[in-house]
Length: 495
Ligand code: ADP
Image 1 (cartoon, rainbow, N blue to C red):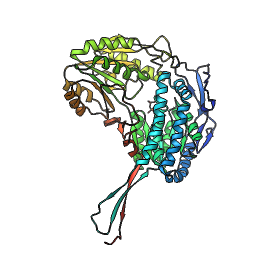
Image 2: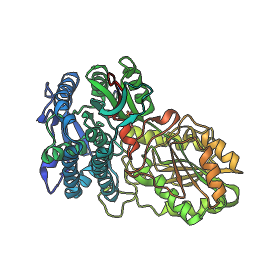
Image 3: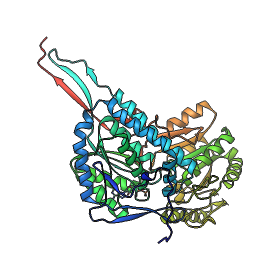
């Protein structure tokens, strides 16, 4: 147990909340229990928040059902106006939100600023997009009938979010849901509830009606009870989840009983392919960004870097030289590019992956172990000649560790890239337009970064194929996941 407490010095201290938000009221757990939220950079205590369970979740669901009746009937423009105020408030309080995010999650402050802007953007985008949800009229095959198609919010939704993007994952689910008229009970990750609670505080200020968005907090041990209530309560019509494949599959099983709608954004195992004809400056810069952003703790991080024979050595040399320059440190220090890992468990997984790759013959070119900062800081690491059988080639490493593999031709690269049950993001660098089309058409992934290592933007559909998930978040396609299509067959119109 850490003895120290980090003082969270926010300009607006009321954004640091130690209560959950249910039905428009800030509240403690029924039994008064709390859990600690710690700074992963120091293990210092940031705050304690309520440990909630079935009872509190049920109350939040009931409040969401009450709120749904009015919220769904409001014109989209009215809902959008409230969401726009939420977005404005997020940007107005961007410094505080970014600081809170860095303190509870560990990422560099500059990345937190980017995340807050990205998170706020979903509120604006979906608020506007919901104004353009059109129905349809279908030419009727019968003289006395008309066929109309109308769109409706799915209903009360549950949202369960992970710790790696504590703000953006909240709005990426809540914004489309709320914009189309759904209401939501959200459970943020136990490591990072403070960002979600701060968003709830701003939602309250923006005038979001009570119950439209509730935030129920719980520790790791409480998550199964909260999740089970969300999936078994018949009021809840949909679950939106981002997190591990294991929990995603469990929730999908649980939802099967009531045939509940699910959107799942699960793990990836992104290939990052550099072909001989790539612009190497761009490829190296893209790979460094894609690999080391958020200390490699993203589901779209480059997990397998594949470099073609002709440029392999040069790419490895240049990439390693760039990775060696990355400053490891506490997220609030301006020079920091790589923060700590989220917790000890993450640190152990990363260490295990490095050891396994080395045992299977990988060449260690940089780092390879704990950073001198101690705690969960891991040195930026580069390994070449990583076996395709190594754990780091088969599973997400979720750390600042780059494993490189050398390949011969295009067909081999595609085969390696697709040889995984996952299918979230893939990247490749090439200047040959024919190759760009061929490779794009054969990679089995939901998102392709071509000559870029950064793909997240609110206007584009984010989501995976195969075991990486179901549904899309962001963009006009992201609206579909939160609406139902209804068909009206109107008879008795004699012609
Ligand atoms: P990670 O391994 O990245 O922490 P998890 O899938 O464990 O990913 O966590 C993602 C989210 O799922 C977190 O909010 C976590 O509390 C929640 N969670 C974990 N287990 C369950 C469960 N059995 N039911 C519902 N939610 C869960």
